[in-house]
Image 1 (cartoon, one colour):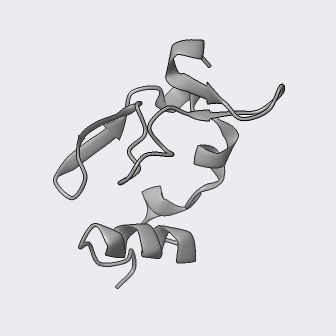
Image 2 (cartoon, rainbow, N blue to C red):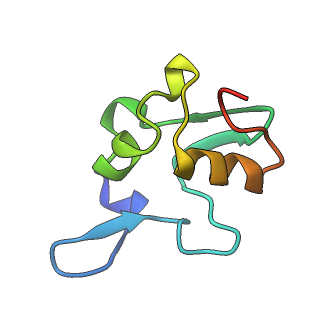
Length: 79
């Protein structure tokens, strides 16, 4: 992960820049949520992003995905 995209949390842990701001917005996110958004580092995204809604591409969300979609005025996947 490029250092310019991260913020150190501990000596061995980082988080994506922008995710600790209000409202949170990852520096790697391009576009507008709810219209057209994409990850600019998708192939190299960190583990937490890979673990989040692993079946979303199949139209299957999980509770974390549903909460995030509701925050942005979107219906949960599968509804």
